[in-house]
Image 1 (cartoon, rainbow, N blue to C red):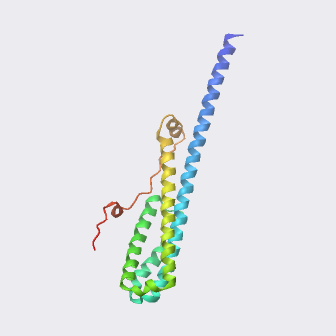
Image 2 (image 1 turned 60 degrees about the vertical axis):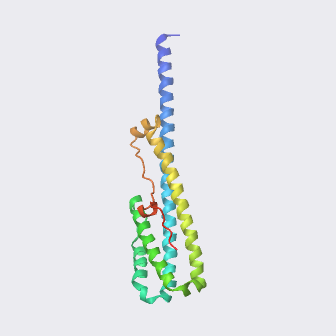
Image 3 (image 1 turned 90 degrees about the vertical axis):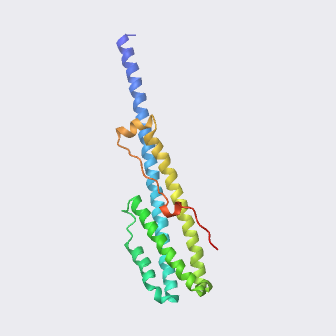
Length: 188
């Protein structure tokens, strides 16, 4: 066999292996990116559900606490101003923080009006809110797990070579608000 043909065959095999490796790495990175986007959409769904439940809760609470109207209207205004599909992960974290503040304000109203707890609708909404919060936490965990996997692919060798070639960048984790990182002080 001619040595030139052998060299061409070897070079062809090496180029084929490199091409397969690049295609596989690219597809793996693209798959990770899609999973991160899907998980972010899951957070959007959970936030939307949370806002919808809070809006309904506000309507129930309004009937019992008309003079707390300003706090309750702030929650509705916040709900109506949310633009989830176009919001960045940082904006979504800010929205969560604002909704947490609104939830604390509603809980103050509940403490001031114990008869709210006796209302069946309110009890149902409290259970639903608990369920929604658990769903939101699960969506955050899924998102962060997908971001972790994707970021590893983007940053670790050898897939980081392909990530650099095709301009894949790391994604940010969904992080807890600063006040939730502090130790809880229990006073009785």
